[in-house]
Structure formats: structure tokens, C-alpha cells
Length: 187
View 1 (cartoon, helix red, strand yellow):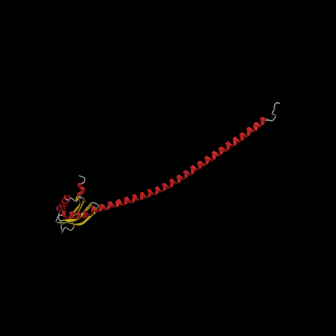
View 2: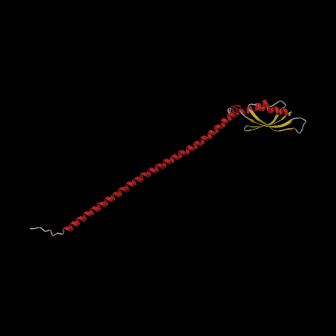
View 3: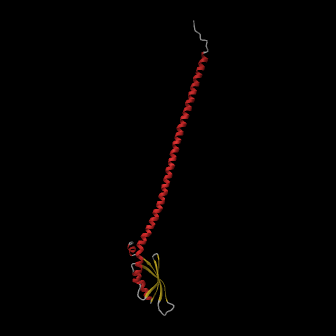
């Protein structure tokens, strides 16, 4: 006898396929959800790592800025010390110049003249004094021109005293103090 299947096989096949599709869709959704969660965790971890690196860089930058600040302070201290050393060196080299100034003034000051005032500002020297004649003042200026330590004599004032009983002439003379070593270097 022939077997006839009267069961609704098409409907069972459709239900079976719908069930398989549901499983596949659920598996796809679960897999997608798993991938989204996994991606989220990975990205979250990378963000956390980057934040840690950024914090590390900020700390290192702060340390370097402190070191830069210290270096700048040290450079200021260094430049201050160097300027002090230069001043001290200048004082050391110019210390004997005042002795040479007085020595040269004694050597170039002719007999019959004397000084009433001596002023020095930097290398500029101003002499005020009295002389018996104009020739004595001229002799003083020639002596200054020949001197190794004095140069550029300039007579700014010469007059005879008001009370001409002494017969002296009052003079004001300006000049520059130099160092023979300084003159030799440019040549």
C-alpha cells in the first residue's frame, strides 16, 4: 500500500526554518553584541592607557619645566657672578692706575705751579691750580702730551688772580688717563 503522508510537512518545514532563522538571528545578534562589547572594552582600555601616558607626560613636562626654571635661575646667578668677576677684574687692573696718575702728575707738574683741586670721573681727569706764568701751564700741557699715562690735555680756563699781589695765574686743565698697555694693543 502506498504511504501517503497527510501531515502538514510544509508547515513543519516552515516552522523548522523559522526556528533555525531565529537561532541564527539570535546568534548573529549575540555575536554582534559580543563584538560591540569587546570593541568597547578594547577602546576603553586604549583610552585608559592613553590617559595614563598623558598623565605621565604631564608629570615629566612639569619636572622639565622645574629644571628649566632652575637652569634659568642658575644662568641669572652665573651672569651676575660673571659681571661681579669682571668688575673685580677691572678693579684689580685699575688699582695701580691711581698711583700712576699721581706719579705722572708729580712728574709733569713744573716748578712754579701747584694744584688746588684734582678730580677724576672715569678716565677724565680735571686739574685746577695756580702757576707763576702762562709758560708754566704750557710746560704742564707738553709734559702731559709726552706722558705714557696721560693724554689729550685741554686747557679750559686760565686767568690771572684778582688780587694780583701774588702774580699767579689760575688754570683749569682737563685730560684723559690711559694705560700704556691699552695704547699698544690696537697697533
